[in-house]
Image 1 (tube, rainbow, N blue to C red):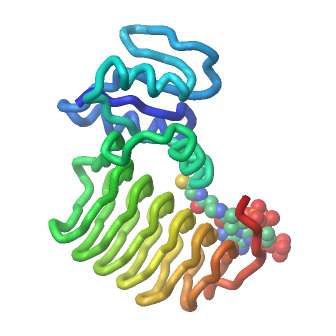
Image 2: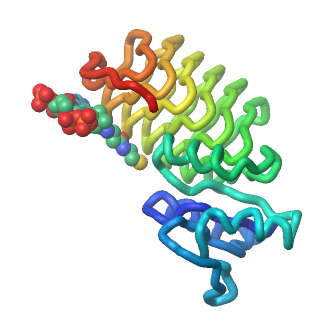
Length: 212
Ligand SMILES: CC(C)(COP(=O)(O)OP(=O)(O)OC[C@H]1O[C@@H](n2cnc3c(N)ncnc32)[C@H](O)[C@@H]1OP(=O)(O)O)[C@@H](O)C(=O)NCCC(=O)NCCS
């Protein structure tokens, strides 16, 4: 598979490691808006994100992944590019354990040493980060990020754009609203409303924000 990686920050380093562990995936381009024009360096195209359409017009089998950790930025790039859903590929590290009854959306990345258990449904452009445990029957909305070592214990609903911080735990059956942020190490024992930030054990809301 010929792959275009969009984004060249810290998160993309982890995604590149994942890709390099796969013999059937080859990075042919890295696009980031820190670049002004499309060039070729060491046989890899380097250029701004707007080059995606040109590359796709030359090779219509190309696949894309947005390698950007910030959920809002990831969504804004998907919206700006307007590529078809099928142009995005999901990438799963070879050490991840993903149930055959789980569903994984387009553009979603599942990092090393993760577990995605039975009947869990993961949306598009989600990050299941290193060591996260996503137990059975969870529903994770598009653009969410389950940070390293976070745990969704089962039947948890994580809505669009939500960030579950590193090492946080959500007890069974709780719901986290759109674009909420759960602090690192939190223990969520109640539903968390849309756009809220909650921290601590048990998690308490410390702020609410408007999503532009
Ligand atoms: C929750 C979080 C987003 C808050 O960030 P922030 O809005 O900048 O908040 P602040 O740092 O100003 O902290 C506000 C208050 O919450 C407390 N707080 C912040 N994060 C906390 C956490 N994870 N657990 C407990 N308390 C926390 C602070 O001590 C501070 O308390 P105070 O008002 O009594 O001094 C951030 O601290 C966090 O935990 N992010 C998750 C990072 C992560 O897991 N990244 C994964 C990358 S792969």
